[in-house]
Length: 84
Image (cartoon, rainbow, N blue to C red; front, side):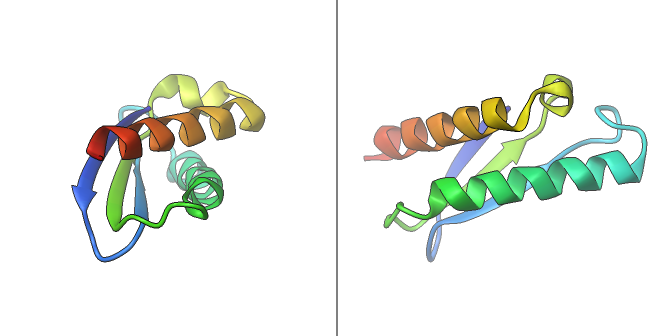
């Protein structure tokens, strides 16, 4: 996954996946739902007004949820530290 950081009204997150990454809409929507759920938990303790855009890569489709959760939390934590 890659992450883009922008200033926003509050902590927000968007998950993006291309048709090249997952051909079927069902797979793309499932990946976005999982990404949003895991990002919501990671954003719960962020007070800064930032917006994140998570680009889902093919490897993330096959990764276990526990690993994705750890990766998303780590990416968000690093991005917030970088922005300060």
